[in-house]
Image 1: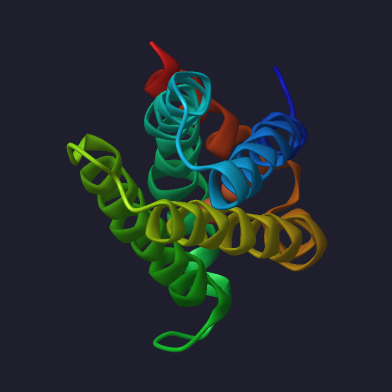
Image 2 (image 1 turned 180 degrees about the vertical axis):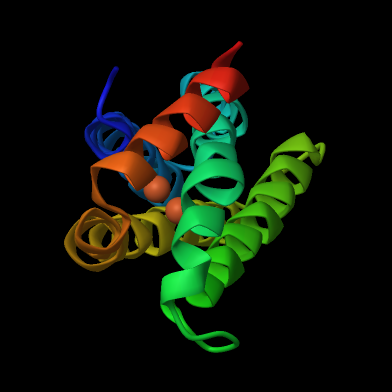
Length: 157
Ligand SMILES: [Fe+2]
Ligand SMILES: [Fe+2]
């Protein structure tokens, strides 16, 4: 059985690579305006966010976070903070989708929204990798992690 924490961390690495590309595109849009190429690149970034990242967050929200909840304070605990950041991501995502769909998108808004996503997700991933996931390893133990892995597998079917 795949270690669910390793799997989630691997998905973070793929996410970080996509964020590097999105940052480059956002800076190019700020400097030169939206070209057909950068529009296509941003659409691809949005597809990644709404496919891979949405699926990743679902694994956390449906499998990992509920397993961790009994060990952590709430409200105001680390899982609540992570959930709030997931919601913040979808707000920025919807904004970027709307801005990109405008007939003549404003390059400053577009770039700022995209960079907001980059910043939010880099910081979010860093907190999960360095704080939340190590906590999960510590609290859940082998049995708890195996249960998380089963739920993650079920979500992938
Ligand atoms: Fe997350
Ligand atoms: Fe994550």
